[in-house]
Amino acid sequence: MTLVRSTGDRPPDERLDYWHEIVAESLVRLRISAAEGPAVVASLSVDDLGDLRLCSVCAGGGEVVRTPRLISASSEPLILLSLQTSGSSVVAQDGREALLRPGDFAFYDTSRPYSLGFHDPFTMTVLRVPARSLALPESTMRATTATVFRGDDGFGRLLSPFLTGLAAQAGSYHESARAELAGGIPELIRAAVALRAGQATPFREDAPGSALLAQIKQYIERHLDAPGLSPSAVAHAHGLSTRYLQKLFAREDTSPAAWIRWRRLEMCRRDLTRPASAHRTIEAVAFRWGFASAAHFSRVFKDTYGMTPREWRAAANEGPDRTA
Image 1 (tube, helix red, strand yellow):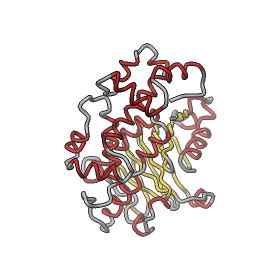
Image 2: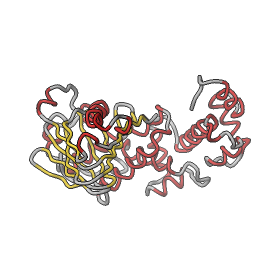
Image 3: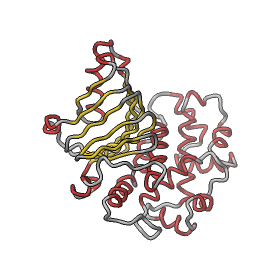
Image 4: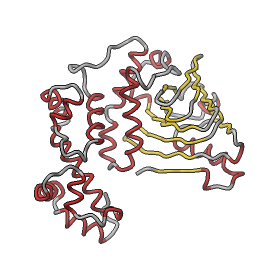
């Protein structure tokens, strides 16, 4: 579930203080200066992905600073990844500055001072990762903070669209699905940081595949409604053999076909409980998410959830206990 908070909920003279509160509770404590002054107009949405947190920020010009005093009052070290989605920003840490334009991202470490400056209104996706989950030496992380990862090159071409898509869709996923999709992100970040620090080579087919699997799962999410989505189509889209794709999913005790079927079932299960989909027939919901046969859909739905789609929809309409 996506939590959205906005300064528009408060009187103008209280908004800057409220914005400090929102940012502190959602990301980390910062000293914030806003071009609009106390009447700042800004919003922030939050999606939790297991131990990770994904935030979408929309605000005007200004500056945020992580000061030594704020650091001393904090506990767990965090690594933040800021992906510029509109406007521009300058990230400064460890004696470096990184100018971010849409599609670019940079890392910074909340255990050391840093700042972000914004000349104009902007939107940004910020990924918050516990430093412990990356298990990187501080010297390695320090070597890559406030350096630009271009959205059209290298790991940027992989991470930027992945995070953009995840931010757009995370609110519609169940908690377990969000955690699954986020599972490969720390490995992908470790690879990107280590490469930038000159300590690793890009992952290959024979390298640990969690990051690649996360990318593949995101691709599947974007194409669930395509009837032609199949293991062979997914493998072809990623330049892999079907056999290797099967091997990747086998690490999680599943298969590409089973994963596609489960994600389609989850989308159908969600739609069957949504008031906005109440006018759709069960068959229409099934076809919308790539099932070619209503009978097959009903059978696998009952096998998975223990009741037919019709029974599920009826139970959901009886009360709030069962939601999707």
